[in-house]
Image (cartoon, rainbow, N blue to C red; front, side, top):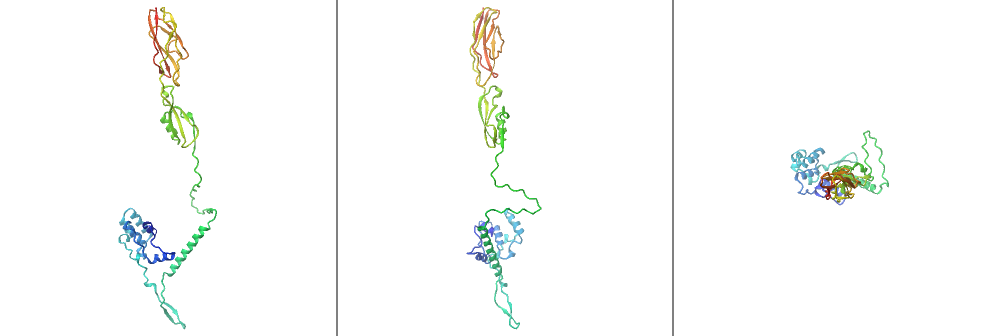
Length: 345
């Protein structure tokens, strides 16, 4: 009946009351299933509704094998379990039950001990039908009592006395547990590349955003991580912003050299000076590096930061010498300065 209703969208038997439905199940035949349902499936369902038990599937196992076989399209196997799938032999599906043996003569006792024959007829389904109606009424009353007399608080189930291991209790429908706390420490990620920090923080369940920040103070630090925000206790799904060093800005051309005199006797010394140089961005000044095509410089090149003057010893022969310098910022060389020319006379 359930299979029929699932396929047809309606119940196979209907009536104005429970009694009418029960009588329809005994005497009436259900309408044919829609033709959109495969014929073997229609035959299987209708065989289950056959009035004669002999025309129904012989056992529940046969019915199961037939249904499984039809589901995978194996009609032959299904028919072997339930022959009516191929034959459609549900001839009594629309025929009332045979009532040939429904009438029998009952003996009755006359006064004086004689026996008379009763010609009254009695349907053998009368008492089963009465019992069915009684069961339906009991179920209906029990359902109503269960609906309208439910206890205000659910009763706790009695402890099981079974010796078999009890299954693990299912979790109560409490709020979902808070995400696990993730402790982020800045020092753990300093110096990482972008791909390394994305992998490390992403594996913790954090959403990572990498941005380019300050210029690097040396070429080897370009692209390296120097900031992670926020840090400390975080939770899965939190967003973390990571800053990495950008390209190193090139140093500009240093200022021109100045001299106390541009000429002097051979072998004499001349003082030269320059303006302190400030490297761009966060680059550190490493040294001043001088180039001379004659004479000598004191202190010798390269000259460390903090020094802004030196002495040039002119060559021992008359002639001109040319002096330039550049600066080293974090290992990056600036362009050469303008040329200072000194003449030995």
